[in-house]
Length: 153
Image (cartoon, rainbow, N blue to C red):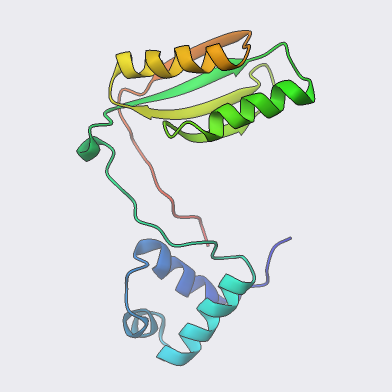
């Protein structure tokens, strides 16, 4: 259920998404308010679950993780036990940055970040050894055109 936000809340959220390390004074100045009301609004949005956490965004290439694969998975298994094992395997793999269950011909799509193709193969072999998968298609991203964590507020 969506939380009711006013224009000031949205301005604060936009600033936090640009840089959550900004001081309250900086955010207040940019949104046209003072420090205490901004702090109260941020606290309220945290309590309401609008702001779930603050984190650092790392550069994968600086960490040697130069290959990004989108992995399309089709399965013939749809039982609860298979799904439990599959989801557990995904959650335990740090290479999996995102995993989505889809409508349509493809059951799941994964975003996997690894060092290179050999590292992807290691990931792939480990995954299929843990859970039975009908079909896997891996697509190598040649260029990242847009990547953001910023939601339209």
